[in-house]
Length: 277
Image (cartoon, rainbow, N blue to C red; front, side, top):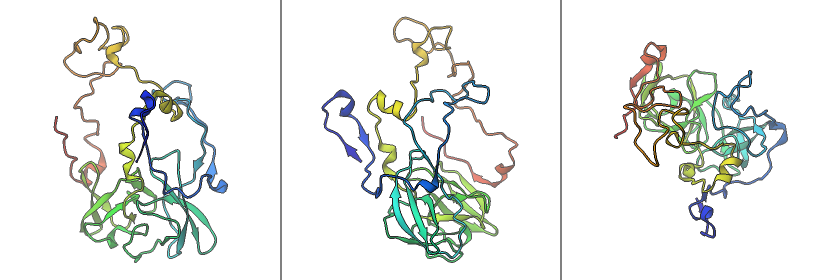
């Protein structure tokens, strides 16, 4: 984590991620594509996700979440920054000359050798089926459905823990505390995702948020009564309503959003832990 001297009010609290693991400044052009920005709007032009828009121009890196090239060793050619995700990415060059981007692990460095195999060594960066990973190991980029590609634990510093092996299922403990059954034939990468200090980043000033494509968020209590259930009053006042609500009056606080009849609920062994108020 990098800090700054307090030469301005915005710099006083600002922190940025330590980019010393980054080895190159430009991406591999053949593995990039331009994505059109929709600023949170749907096909009708209506805003469906608020507070999005603007931001710095960026290229999307094509990430190989499957890493399906079995028994083909690869070498880490570069560690790069990805503007579309919080974790760093690693550019692999395979022994047959092919290249691909994958999610980098926490201690990845240029020159490391990795492989995707059914019996790969249990070292960070190697990818193998969940059924071949012992209990207690940390993995990331794990597959929910075999062959679909990694979907679990892909953000910076995240990981899931192998807690048990039961027949055709592997029990994984998720970052939320939930313990869930996953088909054992699915693949996962040993280790934890790179850039674990990302949660300590302090934006510092408004301009940096705008560069990230984040538009301002106005407090409901600062609005007028016609605009929000919390609006109105002289100065700072109480909420004025029993339950917390969003801008449309829908109750939000402490309300479960998961559907009770969702089929995958049968695979959840224990639900996520409740946060203490």
